[in-house]
Image (cartoon, rainbow, N blue to C red):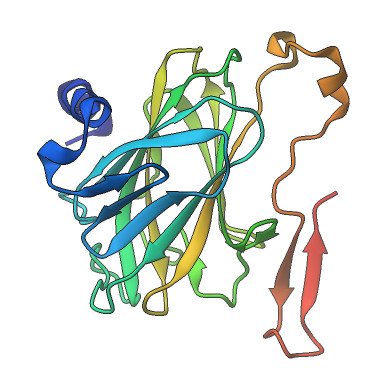
Length: 237
């Protein structure tokens, strides 16, 4: 079923459950982190709050992670795949794989006209070709990635794993959903999903913030294994 009809049917009910409490869903939930079967999502930055999660990660039953963003800067979600037998639940050849739908509520004062998701093994350093982490690279699983409020999707896999969503907006108090997939070639990986929000300048409250750039991961190795002299690191300008 297309994403928009699913959102119209399921999202109001799910958000109500998530906000009132996860106990009714039978999943572990404490301040700062949420645990589903074999995987944990936790706060790695102080500008957002996870509200609820459900699902197994398959294409028919994606993990739906609900969070509210109330602060400025990058939103960093730590993801820890704890189960050795987690497997690829999206039926790819990867050791680990899952379908993810992120529902993000805008609790800031700004209108979002741009949203980017980036994978990182270390915060501030983009995922490169050799670390095994990607948005299901070399696979058509769950593609094209979608959002219910942004019509344009830039699915970039080299030299960093970044998905950019544009041509839309999310006003304060509104929510937006992103449908993606994440895979890894090793078992029990730990990594970060970084979210970059860039409000239009007309909606930035502090004039001096115009001088502060919005940063993605600064550098990413694009050639050669880590111990190879042929390894080249490309930095964003």
